[in-house]
Image (cartoon, helix red, strand yellow):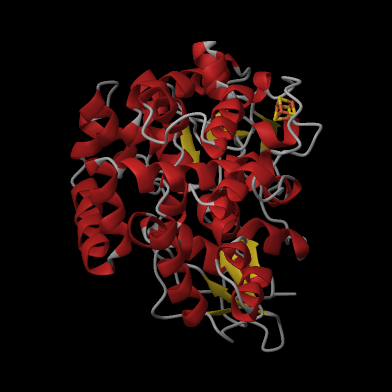
Length: 422
Ligand code: SF4
Ligand code: SF4
C-alpha cells in the first residue's frame, strides 16, 4: 500500500485510545456482541491493514469491514474525535483495489452510475408498485421484504398525488435548486413535490437544474472512490451558478454532497458543498410557517447520515413541530441505524434485519402506538416501511416534509384564496 493510501486510513483514526465508549452506540456490536463488529475492533483491523500487518485480501478483515453499516453512530459517542467514517471509506477503497468488488455490488453501482439504466428500471418499479402487488406480497422473507420496501415508497392513498404549485411565490426570496438524485426522483416524486411546495410556501424561489444525477454516496461507501468522484464532477458542473442553496431531501445524498469539497479539489466543489442544505434546515431557517391541525401520533427516527454525518438534529423536529395538533416524540434509540445503509441491506441481509429488529421493537414498545414514523432518508423510509409491513404494525413511514405538506394542503396554505405567503 502506498504511503499516501496508508495515511488516508491512519490519520482520521489516529485519536483512538481504545476506551470503548463507542461500543454501546454501534448497532452491529449490539446485534452480535463480537468486538470485531465494533468500532474499536474495526479500528484495530484498519490500523493493521494500513501498517501492512494484515493483507487487504485477508478474508476475516474483509468480512468485518464489510459488516460495518457506515452509519457513523460511533462518531458522536467518541470523546477523542475519531473521524471513523473517513477512515472506513479509505480502508474500503484499498480493499476494493486489492480484492475487487463483489459482483452484485458492481452491478448495482453500475446501474446507479448510468441514468439510462436507473431511470427506466426504477420507473418500471414505480409502475409495478401502482398495481398494488408489492403491498399484497409484502412480508418477512427475503423476496417479500423486497416487495415491502417497494410498497413503502408509495404516498398515502388518502391524498391526491399531485397538486398545483403555490401561487404568489415571492420574487425576492432566496433561490433554491432541488437536488433530485436517482431513487428520490423516480420512486419518491411525491416527496420532491412536497419539498418544492413547502419551500415555496416558506418564501423560497425553487429552480430546476438539468443534467444532474446520482450523488455517488452508494459508490463512496462501497469503496468505489473513482465512481463517486465521476458523479460528483457531473453534479458540480450541473449546479454551477444555479441558485443560492441546493436543497436535499435525502440524508444519505446530503451527507456526501456536503463532503464534495473533500472528494474533489478546487473552488467549484467547495462552492457547491457550501450551498448544500437539508430541506429541513432550509424550512427551519424560515420558521417554518405553521399549519394544522393534524390529529396524529408521530415518532421521529433520525437518519444516521442526517444526525451523525451532517450534525442536523433540531431542524427536522422544528419542521414537525410546525404542524399543530401532532403529538411528537423521538423514538427510543432514534439515533441508532435502522440497518438500511445504502446497499448494505442487499449485501448483508441477515445482519441488516437483525439491526432493523431492534428498531421495530422500539416502535412496538412506543406507548401510545405511533401512526407515523417520520424519517428523512429514502433508505430508512423503505427499510422501516417494509419492517412495519412485515411485522404487521399499523404505522407508516413518512418524510417530515410530507407531513408538513399534508398540513399545508388540508389547511389552505396552497389555496389561492387561503392565507397569503409571508
Ligand atoms: S473510537 Fe473513540 S470511543 Fe471508540 S474506542 Fe476509539 S477513542 Fe474510544
Ligand atoms: S459506522 Fe456504525 S456500524 Fe460501523 S462501527 Fe460505527 S457505529 Fe458501528
